[in-house]
Length: 304
Image (tube, rainbow, N blue to C red):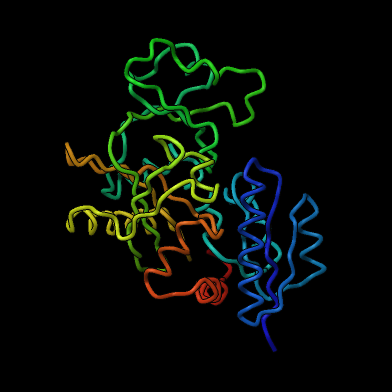
């Protein structure tokens, strides 16, 4: 009998639309691969819903707070339902970009120099000399990312808005000029390296990520072979140091002029839409989308 897979999607974070897209793509592919699939648009009754459904496996296609920060993972552990991606600790750690950087640096992965500050402090003064990047410490999809250029006199006052929805703390990091690179890890193996060029501006923002044609994925990235290998090694080291499981994706900045390479963050719930990076990387490695999601379901477990 085919496995019954509950695909969790939606939720209530700012990344709900992305999660719905990821969830639909994964559910469609799992059905195509012969699994019995139930699509669950997650709300706060998710434990009750899953308790009634009793699936064999939960495919987590949630993004952002609650879905990616160890919270839903804890619920699944309590319910005793095997699930995809990383467990409670790794999810919570990776979601807090500032804490994750401490772990990655201790494991020998270079990270950008930065500080954590309240959003009001960031709005009031330059907490680092420009150019720098300010972003919420615990959000994804490039929400709330502000690039402060070298010639900008004023600090980013938008971070102090009364209606700011992305948390009270921000991570402020030196801006590294150059290329945006990303590398996925699948189990204990690093896949290829993509260079991401944005078509919508100079930064890989929300629109560049999710709008069709918003970005160009250059795969394999046109960088020196030793740097390519270094990115793969760093992605795998970061994945292992944070305790990630299943599939993760690490994002990097590389400045060829100064040969500076830093890891920005590890995504434990990378996007799984048709324009997403991980399916591209898997395809480059010879895996179809259906084979990728099937591997993720077979890899699912408890106590991750």
